[in-house]
Length: 351
Ligand code: GUN
Ligand code: FE
Image (cartoon, rainbow, N blue to C red; front, side, top):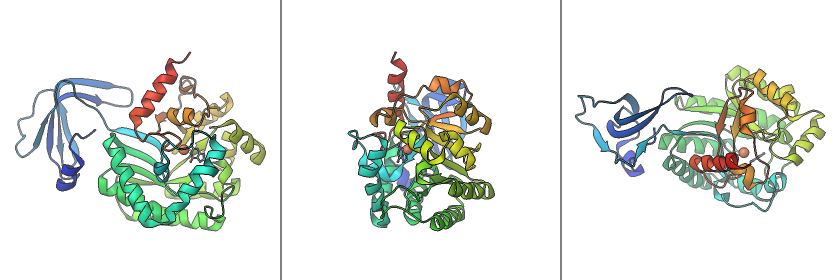
């Protein structure tokens, strides 16, 4: 649910302790395919959770903060960003002069390398989490940086401001600058430690996610070890796939196979995996996605900003693959999922 209270009120009262009644026009998702419009209805929130949704007012409202929506306001369910790079927030709007592989080396890796600094991490991550919540993102699937401690600071900001999230420390052992790369051994040990750190927080809203950056940053051996951890720990996996033609050609060269098979040979395609982009996936690769139950994060704003191509999402949906929307900050230049919707709409209108 997108909360209309200011951050200040939420901070003063505490996001989990609010009891409030919101009265007005409400859009309610019964499930992923059914949406209900309730005119002049209400949502009652108790202890930070939705207790009731209805069309005639409840009797017991004493002690609640009551908010009356105007006729031009609609309360909608919280938005989900299925792919966002938290450390890239300072780069939003930067880099449209490059395509993916040059963009990573010129802008992205140098920015992400700064997150060794934990004070800097806290400043950026607190601002980003507050911003995404202000834009209505109540759930996000975050890529952190290479650094475990810094990614834990991201997690603490998410917990402080009350978002639901999957959070990943990225794995990157190849094709990166000396100040932003890790050894195979450290990649494994830090991933195990990160999962344990997150689980020990015992926060029901936060899950760790195994996050190999993309196929060019890892190899089959590392992927197999990460797949083993994912299975043992029962955690999600996220990465990028088939975003850019040069990237796809490099994957073919490195793995001697297509992109989806390269990931599948490393055990990365599971029913708890979310792959971003998938613009250029072939029919055979989409069939493999369907067989493995792997989901796709569609990032339309990023696909045009980095000139990666237009993703024919209707073709992908014919394979009955689950698709969500992602901002892909800073491939996408806005942390708002509503902006990602607008970008997608423009693409759907194209001939
Ligand atoms: N592929 C590998 N890393 C990245 C990244 O940070 N952003 C995008 N859009 N694609 C990637
Ligand atoms: Fe991305």
